[in-house]
Image (cartoon, helix red, strand yellow):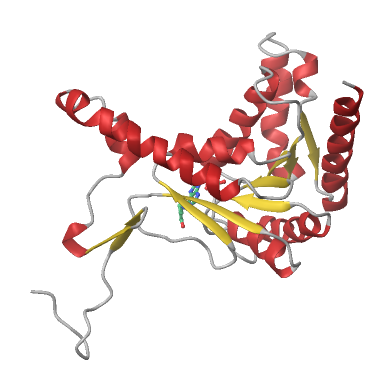
Length: 259
Ligand SMILES: C/C(=C\CNc1ncnc2c1ncn2[C@@H]1O[C@H](COP(=O)(O)O)[C@@H](O)[C@H]1O)CO
């Protein structure tokens, strides 16, 4: 039996799944994404996947419904592990504020580190601060600076929202998750699945090794074209990043008006 403190149960592990809160023994050992993508349990495909499709559909409905009235927005990505006093968090906070001042909502993954710093900057500047959280094996909750938050079970549904509701992507230093988001964005622009919109790397020093490799290996080997390289802009200057986004939006609006 669980011991209580002052008549109340002690803090327990918990997990949120949509409207459902699971605590203690009810917390499942795996996440919804993991179950969907697991190829070992073939026996479940026939019995469970059709129902999962409905759950996936409901996540799209929830996301579309919640975000439909968002003002123009920018998705900001970066490490979940950066400390609040790190250079990249300081940059993310200034970026979040500058985007808010320019009239953009700021969308992040709703987690800690760079995400939290960008949400904080946006909120403190009086802007709209959005967090698109993801179910993880450990409960984490959305950071406290998120004003509009959605918790997703499925990574790919969440990724659709990052792209659909953003006018640009800004990518700060991060790990695998950040690289995944960066290259998904660049691939979507390269293959013209999304209208050309800016993908901006901030943290020149952090990204320089990767950019050198892209130029010296990918480009020289013919795996990308010189024009593809131009899809990624790089700067440490917050004002310049915002200007790139505003200019791209204006160019897009002018082109639309002429059509
Ligand atoms: C590892 C820790 C927390 C993980 N929490 C996350 N919450 C929300 N979004 C996340 C989380 N981890 C990764 N992401 C997404 O990937 C990007 C960051 O990944 P990276 O590997 O840290 O670069 C980020 O933009 C999110 O969209 C510890 O507290």
